Length: 87
Image 1 (cartoon, rainbow, N blue to C red):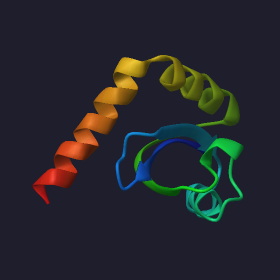
Image 2: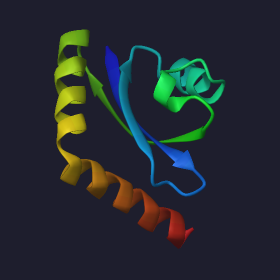
Image 3: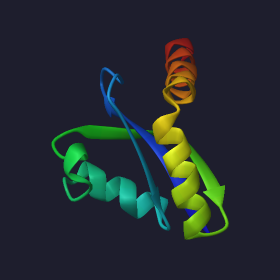
């Protein structure tokens, strides 16, 4: 089992990051401690979306799809921001 996830940088939520992992909680903690990908260092990240897939191969394919499909990525972010404003 693996996860594909979308993070946004708080507080503005304009910058996003997509990745994959086998341990979602551990990976988010690493990003927020500056031990994640180089792009994510120095920012506070919030998990807004994730998918569960069966294996690493499926995770890598789906991660690639999300990274290349900016419309879908922006739709996910927009949905999150609407929910955040309603709270």
